[in-house]
Length: 365
Image 1 (cartoon, rainbow, N blue to C red):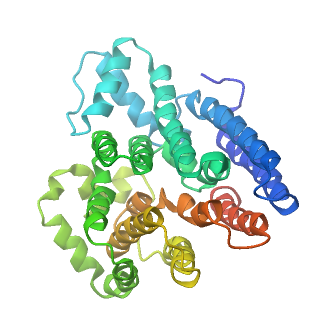
Image 2 (cartoon, one colour):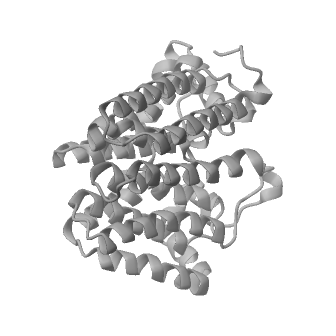
Image 3 (cartoon, rainbow, N blue to C red):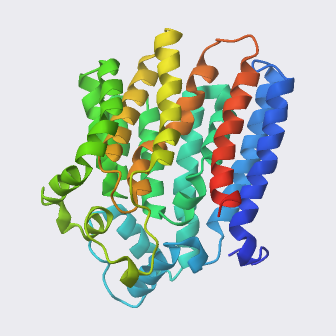
């Protein structure tokens, strides 16, 4: 457990550290050519440094209410240490991992393992997708405004999304589904991107997925409450968490501030990946089957979130697509040559993406 960093600045230190790394990365983007071997080695070195320091900082954090749901995970961990069975959710792998470490009475090792399962798959996925340029993509993932919250607060969801991304990077189809199933047994919400992946494997007209995303906005504006009631009526509400996220919830009794309503700010953020991918697919005529499927999965998952955007904690539904956004934004620029000054264009995208999260998590809090 890290006791060197005072708790009041523990989270802020992460964001200020990434700010320094972002400045260093942007300076490099505007002064060096993307394809230089020395540039690739430099970015990889920076990314390895960030990988190690962030893993230690996140994984060795103290158990404290400042990290959101971490304190609830700890309470369940202590309950298991005291001889009580786990709650019996369908996330068997996560529960089994908790039981295993509870047997050794090692909560700190448990949380470090959670951080490792969250960060290491991102590293592997970036290496598979982008080879020598993996450092840009990995830093883009760390710069996401959802990265820290889903590593320390929405822990199960964060791990599951990282494992799902690892599956997406697998070259063999059967290996993809193995990782997808493992992800589901960490958090069953990953059924949404899984269904989207299956759908896009058989129906590949990407124009229809863009149309679905665009139409989801007016449909949600007109029928949002009806749609939320429909999903609750499917029998899924036996899951208490779904009742909390989509149904009636007593905010005062729970002592939390819910993020509810039609979130235009979140839609505009989501549109970054929609507009960027559309530009490269339709304007630049980029032919890449992997990118088109990743984009299609994003459009389906994000469009579904828009349909139920008024739900409690709507950002948790949005995360089921947002965890892919960083890769979608840099994928074309790391795989193909479009501009003479491509490293500068890449730097501008990274800077804008980072500043969104930095202002949201640091400046505006």
